[in-house]
Structures are given as C-alpha cells and as structure tokens.
Image (cartoon, rainbow, N blue to C red; front, side, top):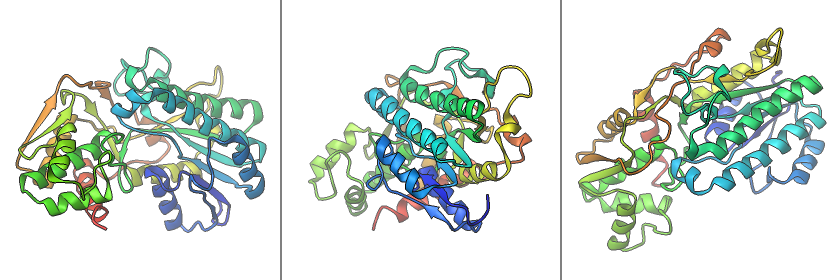
Length: 359
C-alpha cells in the first residue's frame, strides 16, 4: 500500500476497526473513506454497492461484524448468522465488482471444531463439529474464509482472511448482556469493588455511562442492587459463568491491528496458497500462542482492580469450548510476533475503562 491509497476500514468505530485506523494513521496513511453504521448499513446490498461505486476504495479492511459473548450467541442465533453473512457477502462482492486491490477479512478462532487439536492449526478447519453455543457465528465466518478463497481462485483477487484469537482493548464492549468474557469480568469485578466499598458515586456514574438493561445511575439503590444481583454482582461476591476451567488465549486489540496492517502491507494470497493440490486453509491465525484458565484471568483482574470480595464460578452456566489455543506457526513464519502480555493488557484496559466511564 502507498500512503495515499484510498482505504476503507469497515467497522472503524469498533474494537478492531478503531485500532486498525489508529495504526494506519500512525504509519502515515492519510486517505481514508469511513462510514458509521448510521451512514452506511453494510447489510443493505444496494447501499453498499452505491458506496463502492462512488468512493472506489483501493484497500479494504473488513472488520465490521455483529459480535458478542456466550450469552448473546446463545440467545440471538439468527441475528449472528444473518447479519454477518450479509455484511461479508455485500462487502466482498462489491470489492470484486469495483476493482479493490486487496481486502483483509477478519474472522474468529471460533471457526475451529470444539474438539480441535491444541494448539489449533489452520488445517483443522471443518474436520469435526463446532462448539454449539456459537455455531451460527462460526459458520458465517467460515463462509467468509471460503468466499475470499473462492474469489481469489475464480477472479484472481487478492483477499486475505485472518483469524484472531480472543481480543480485548480500547473501545471494547462492556455491556453485561453482550460483552465477551474479559471485559465482562472487568466490569463485574469493578462494580463488585464499588459495592464492597459502598462507593455509590462511582456506581451511579458507571450506570449513567453504561446502563445495565434499562437501569441507569438515577435509579433507586434497590433497583440498582436488583439488576446487579441479576448479573451476579454483589458487594461481598461476584459470580462468573461456568467452572473457570476453560483455557483461553487473549490478544491486545492494538496488536491485532498491527498484525493486520503488517499482513496487508507484506503478505499476498500467493504467499499462503498451496503451490499444488487443493486450495484450502489459506487463512492466518493471529494470536499469542499463550493460554490461561478463565479462573486465572479472573484472579489477575481481581488483583489489578483491588477487589476484596470473593469470586464464585457458577458451574450450572455453560463453559463454552474448553480450550482454544491458536497455532501461530504460520504467522511467525510470515514475520510478525506479539509483545503485550496479559498482565500489562489487563492493566491498560482497566485504566481505559475508568477513563471512559465517568465522562
């Protein structure tokens, strides 16, 4: 990419998209075409086609997606498959029709089977059943991988699919109904600390900025206590879903962005395409290759926040996949490695959360 090439970052306000935009700006790229969801609904085929025909972006980062944690994936299965398929189909096809030079499609490691070998290599895709709780989302992302591969093979496009591990970082989603595990634990334990210390001023500021369901900071103490209790947040105890035994790998979102920009600058489809035989599994895992149990991550968060109460795991709630460690051999062979470890990342994210909760 040249610094003045026109770049479309789809989902530029989200966790990954905002980090990609920041990384590109820091490297001197200047020519961006950006649209909020209100300005461009990526599930609207006509609107997407009109946008591409008018703006003619040369490079596309497809980081827009409908995402959520285990609770949201279980409740809103139709939304997760429909919305993500529509976004991908519209953006990838419009990119082809309008001569986009290169596209980076961001998926998720939930594409891999529930009983995948550990660490998970790219070639274990579609070898056995998926984890049930997030199957619709995973199927959508698998379709995106195959769409990129198929357009490359039929039309000679240069579309790369990358599969990030569990991401966390600035602009993360802290909604207790829909957030992923790490930001959810940070918010739960933070609110538990505030209750433990009877710091109602901080609780009300938090709920004013991010209401839980319909409960804001202006609600009565009894209403606030009731809704927090519903999510397992009490002064002397915070309840977390599952057994705490599943192992997870976490990558700081700004490092995911750096890997994405690196791949866009240095890696082409020809670099990941088999030289002979069937073309499969050309996607690239992006992760750290390091894992911890959910219980260990929760303990790190508790220590960082300074919560003095108890952490209790509710084994009646689902754990999800028991282990999800990426094999990052291909990524390392292409020249990129992570540098931010989980301790530093948790500290950074909690500080970001505090700075963005009391405005």
